[in-house]
Amino acid sequence: MKLFQIFFLLLAISACSQKRETLPGDTEWQKQMNADFKDATKSPLKEKDRKSFKGLEFFSIDSIYVVDAILTRTPEEKPFKMKTTTDRLADYVKYGIVQFEIEGQSFKLDIYQNLGLMEKEGYEDYLFLPFLDNTNGKESYGGGRYVEAHIPKGNNIVINFNEAYNPYCAYNDKYSCPIVPRNNYLNRKIEAGVKAYDKH
Image (tube, helix red, strand yellow):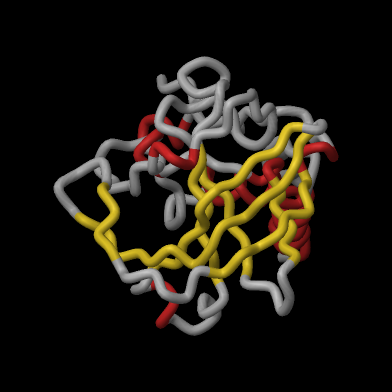
């Protein structure tokens, strides 16, 4: 009986000591992205892609893509229907304009609120910043990428392009994703955030 108990004890210790597959990532954000993509309950990947998933590819972290922007609020904007990759129209409102510089080059982008999301607890101050740049269709997803931000107390807002991510429809065509408005085009390469996904 003692040998039997020892055997199962050793099995339990062995199981606990086995390390889970470590997914790549240089920051906590990157590691969490990869963990979510591997998790069947959260992943946008098709099952066959998720099973062979080894991690997203990211541009190297670069501090020039963490920008201090000036936020100009546009409170008179009316809600509108943003086009998506399907027939669905998403309800958004333009919250304001963010202006910033990258290596001496000036840019401005429209930043939005999702009307449905802002009613959910924890998302009241959530801002949505979709953008296009000169990596699209090459190093990054052709349809552009998204960055998340939060409403600041003042007029200064930090935009971290190192956390730019692909819409879910880049991985799975069952998703309906907002199409980046053409006026949110940055005429330079934004070599930051998630790269294009190589589907299997």
